[in-house]
Length: 116
Image (tube, rainbow, N blue to C red):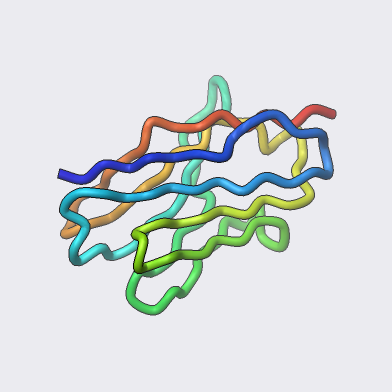
């Protein structure tokens, strides 16, 4: 089994920054990618960003491109999401995702609230 532990959410003013972290533990060998999705109230869960575990190649949603940066620490099985220039529309529950040996794993989610 794989466990994902998220941290770093909170309340921030518009224009501010937050960094989310997600540490994977358990049977994490042959991780394909890790990343983040988000879900605002009454909306579907949307892709935010992901990073390839083998070569670090990032993939970023257009809605956050230029403001969010994803990175990884292979040695510690951790993925980070640095969120700059936050906007009220970024308010959502952010979920960590890991794609490992053909299976998608999810964290419990961390709330990010951006006040105007």
